[in-house]
Image (cartoon, rainbow, N blue to C red; front, side, top):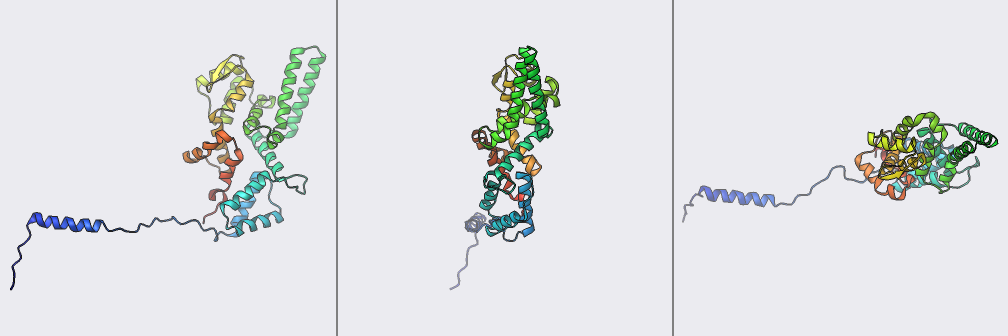
Length: 312
């Protein structure tokens, strides 16, 4: 027997449609995320790896690798497929290896010499060792002349300046031997007569230290506090720290959080030719203020694909 079906009313028809849509929406689909595969470095040309090795040698120890060094390091990197660990091993080797080299030196000695020269380039217009030695000689002669003339105050000042210059010259080996940190290295760079000659008078000295170390100029309040210390030997507060002379000032400006951020920015400028991003700065600063390990900051930069110019 044939039955006549009653047509669905409009509300009922809408209910059925909604039910079908809900069933379709509940269907689970596999979502593919593009470019989410681990990088494959096997296809990187040997010339790219060689350029990376060459750049590391120049940036870290100030010279190109010898042929035997180039062959060995390229082979080591390629055998490890340019892994992060293999890059870190090479960077650490150039920074810390004390193995004897034929030029009567070591990689670590060359690395810290290179760092010392970079610091002088940043603050002292790349003053040569001859200029430093000449300033030391002048301070010694001045101290002797003041002493023979009975000028006690003058002799004391000359001897103080002599000690600052000797400390500047020792900064390379003291830093290498772990006796001082990079903050003390930079304090010595700005607290000596050579820096004073480059930046004559207190006005220029204060602006120069802010620019060299923090990459900015002081606010009026910061300048006033700094000037009171540097020029007037008067107690003042700068970056929440109290000081009353030039020595105190040089210690304060190389211990503020902005100083450590400045070291991060300097590292990116030196090795990548650009400013770090906000996230990169955050990553570096998260531990840097506590461990003060500049080598770690540099290692992070020097093992990136960007620095190595690798496009896997």
